[in-house]
Image (cartoon, rainbow, N blue to C red):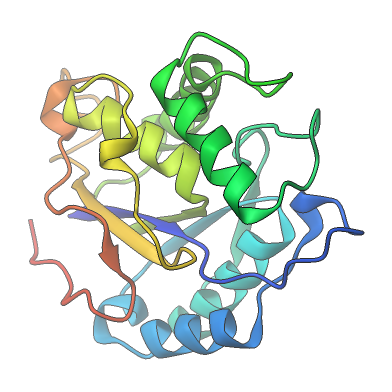
Length: 212
């Protein structure tokens, strides 16, 4: 069976609100609803979400479609950018370039890419270590840390070339869960065999997984 990492779609940007508390825009909500109406979304048996508002709102839409509850996962948020707060789009893109290009270096006080990758991989791994691989699972989160997981699973150095790309979020990639808990190397994200089976794909365009 497969797991998914889903990044939240478009948000309502408000410079006066802390970034982790931004919610989805109407466009973002509509895209999530469209994706949640897909057959693959209704098959999700477990949903685990970052505690940031935009992720929780996305998770709630998928949870309604699949009939499961949302588990809130601590330490699964986007890379900590509180040192700078809101940056205008052009400045943010330049900052993100720096974040990925120099993963060991903090951009003006941001959490480094190396630290963010270690945090998110450790957090998601802890969930999968105890998860039944016969149950499809979706992690709802963010483009930045999602890209860091994607790099880890792919066995490639941190690079923005693997980022979800432009468009405001709302993308996913799928990965195999393995054949059973306790099989050597068959759980978690720690080994190369966890390689994603698709690149970042828009949530409303993904055609779903095959059983395995």
